[in-house]
Every structure is written in C-alpha cells, then in structure tokens.
Length: 309
Ligand code: C5P
Image 1 (cartoon, rainbow, N blue to C red):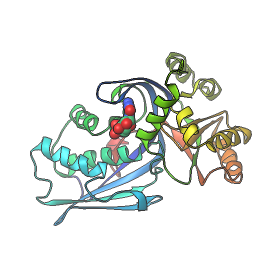
Image 2 (image 1 turned 180 degrees about the vertical axis):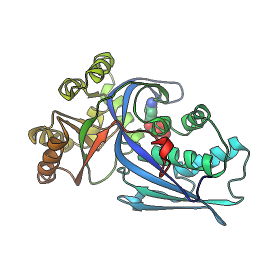
Image 3 (image 1 turned 135 degrees about the vertical axis):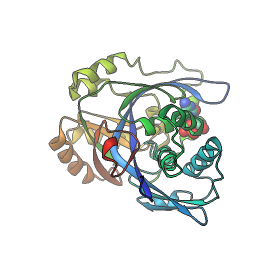
Image 4 (image 1 turned 90 degrees about the vertical axis):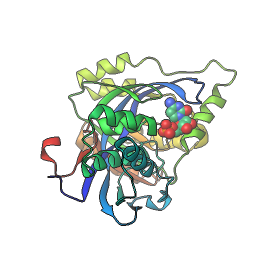
C-alpha cells in the first residue's frame, strides 16, 4: 500500500554540454545536450483534497505561480486526461518545497511537474509505466523527462529524447545563485540575436565529454564543459562574467552557466574542495548565495520508498 500523502523528491539538472542548433518550425531550437541530475532537490507532496490547490514553500517560493499557470498543475491535468480521471473529483493538493533555484536554469519548474506526475501516478494507482510517464512529460516541457529519469543522459530533439549515459563516478559542484531569475525564452532569443549575421560560435560535439565521463576524472571533464546559452545569459547579465571568474579564482576546476542561467555551476576536484570553494565564493560578493551539490543522483523518487533508492 502506498501511504498518503505521497512525497516525491526530484533533482535539479545542470547541462554539462549544451549545443543549440537552428530554430525549428515550432519555434524550439534543436538541441544536443548532456544532462546531469544534482543533489539540489524539490519535494512535491500530493494528497487528496476537497478543493484542488498548490502551495509553495522554500527559497524563491514567492515568485512561483500557485494557479493553473504552474507547470506542476498542467502535469496534474495531463495525467488525469491520460488516465481517464477528473482532476477535481476528488481534488488534489500539491505542496511544493523548493530547494532548486527558481528561474535559475536548473529546471526547477520541470522538476515539480515530474514530481506531480510521479506522485499522482502512485496516488491514483494508475500504474502507468516509465515510458508512458516520459511521453506525458515530453508534452509538458523539454526538461521534464530528464527530471523523471535523473542520472546522466544525452538529450536531443528539444531536449526531451533521452539516452542514459553510464557515469559511475560522483562529481562535486558549487552552485552560485543570482539575485533574480532569467526568462528561458528571452535567453534563447538573445542567442538568436547574437548569432544574427555572424558565424556563430557553437560548442563542439559531446563525444569527448562522454568519454571523459567514463574516466571519472573531474579535471578531464572540467576542460570539456560547454554551454551555447552561456554567451546569451552573460550578455543579459554581464556580472555573471565576474561570478564565473570568482569561482575559478576560488579553486574550482571550471565554471559554466547552468542551462539558460543565471545560476552558475562550478566543478570541483572533490567534496572538500567544493566546501572550500563555496566558502570563498560566498564571501566574494558576486552572487546571492551558494550551495554545494553532487551528481549524478536518481530522478523522481517517492520519499521513503526503499525499493526505488
Ligand atoms: O520546453 P520548455 O517549456 O521548458 O521551454 C521553454 C522555452 O525555452 C521555450 O518556449 C522556448 O522559447 C525555449 N526553448 C527553445 N528550444 C528548446 C527548449 C526551449 O527555444 N530546445
């Protein structure tokens, strides 16, 4: 028996490598990316309720919508439709505890949608398999399938086609949060603007990075991190250049903007180094706050479900 309420833990992601291709007819950009799930997590609790609603707690909760505009609520509706259920009968209360930076380029909203799908599949006993959930996830947003899956994965299409990548080693990260978020479409738009009429600088293929992941040496990986969206995020937030420099000056092996930013992720040699870099970076006055994280970690998991950990 699954206990109610059900709490699902869902990870943030960082793109170790992100190549943005051309704009497609549907307005999305063709991507090739390597995702890694990090130990910064949101917790999404689902419980039956007379009246449906969303409450959000944690860092940045004030700027998260609690109405039908929340991607997690769209996930409730999509799952209900696929499962032949009325989402209001009985209703669902979604309680989200934010540990992932809001609008930070770490797929926090996607994580909440993945958590809602995974939790409600159990609460409503729909018994949908992984592939069916991934299918619904892909309709909700480019990063939702990866939040379900976790680990390390190669993503293509608009990011939703995933192939798991074997990465047995643990990497240690310092995450620098900015004082406010960036709007993802705006960052893609800025990249298009920067590329207009120029020979665009695109990150090279992901193969060398995939090879480095098999060695497990963070120094090798550091050298190969790359993100096409970084130039656009830095163009919109020029102070990120200082943040990125400060992390490396503090002893990180390398720093990149995470996804569409403005969060910056610094790869460190080991866990002690990550703590040292985090302490120095937090005193450098170049970001709002810092966190230490490791990756890869699993995707959406029911808290207390020993079989799934
Ligand atoms: O898929 P998702 O809703 O997360 O994407 C948010 C926005 O990011 C899209 O509306 C689009 O502007 C941009 N995007 C893109 N190409 C992708 C993924 C996202 O242009 N592959």
